[in-house]
Length: 199
Image (cartoon, rainbow, N blue to C red; front, side, top):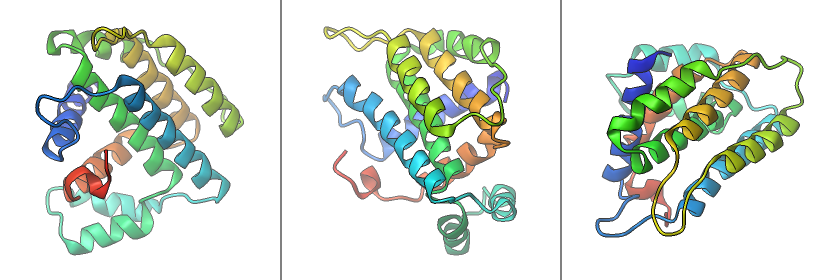
């Protein structure tokens, strides 16, 4: 993961969310709601961990190789072997954070996000308790984000650090988060407006 990759993910994640109707014209978004949607993805990742649902890496590699040629077979493979797994849900957290960045952080400040992302990674023990890490991540994530009621504003560095911590955890679990993010974003482009949900 490098600067160009992250900048592209931020742009593509937000553009796709807009295309899917998650940002109705002339309607502001509730920042607390957007943050809680990130937290809910962590909850889904924990549930997948409890149920021992992990992605089939061979299927992921097939999806990655054919990412420009998505058809019914590709979608079926993704739904059967990747969707709703630990890796997929962690990818969802990454995508939601990237979308949040695209929405709240002025484009000229995206480099600050990237700088904090690249400079904040840390080694996390491979035997860390997953639920405990998620609890501390939520505390770190929410407490490090500073937004004001009167305007949609989040410091760029906070999102960069949150993305870095998530990537560090994925690495500790031997998860190639970049591949799962790319595959999930490709899958999301095939989904109905608002992914069939209210918001």
